[in-house]
View: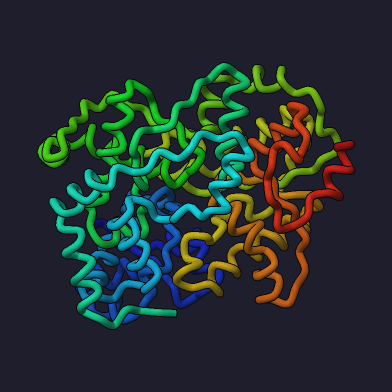
Length: 150
Length: 277
């Protein structure tokens, strides 16, 4: 990775703008130096909105937002994943959908003359998730405890 | 938000585009939670969704830029990388599926601008929204990264501005136009998320726009549904009405607001009166 620490990523980062302790340039530096524990000891890696401005603007075409995803993988492995995201992942694993449809939503659909929802093929979804060890990752995140909550 | 689905289907339908619901598709999958836990799982679910469209011999159109980004990224990864392609083929075959890579992924807006064309859009405008000053918000995932979306200019795009102008409204330039809404991190750090949205409200008011326009359900939730909470968090009042792009188009096409059926947290009545609706 050929980062020369120019800081364009941080300059264009919407999160850094409102929260100065969130600093993509510094996170890349910490990765280059191999100080993973340092980054993973805080919840900062979960603050990326994945707006992709950093990736788009980096003069070295470093995929900063992708790097953050890898860091999130590492954090999740250690059980450090925000509770609400873990719950969302579990919902997807159980139902194939991230957001359940409320009864009000269904009535609304009728009022708007929308066709009934075709439910996700949960059997297929679960087969894919089993084969890619997704439930294993969820369990590991749950069991390692220390869910980072707000 | 069923009214978004209804508006997109209606607008595209007005140009003869027939949209059929995908059979048994799941969450795209949502990249934040799923990708963080497993890239293979993320790619697997995306590939399954792509294979459903392929089986139905249709391209995918989605109203959500997040899904647009996820499915296009998965599509591109699979087309680019033979190893991942092979991996996914094996995975899909476990559920009796296959993926040849024949599906294209579009967003309602890309269909409107690229496939249908803005001149045609202008032709269905029955009620010009003259005098309406709109601050356009492109959001992030329709544009970036350009390697996934194929958009030419991610810093100063014009297609959504031109769509708004085709309704007779004026697209107002403003500082921080390309700023992310902050929505994705609202469940992790609400303060930071709200601060990003606040920045947008302040700049829009500074520019003297009447309203904000979005093309993403998540941005809609952040700017409209969450606006009262953001006002409370900062002890400020913004009163920035938010329109969805196909909602504005539906209005310009002569459809009454009650029929379009959008539920707005921030009242839009004042604005509608201004353009004689």
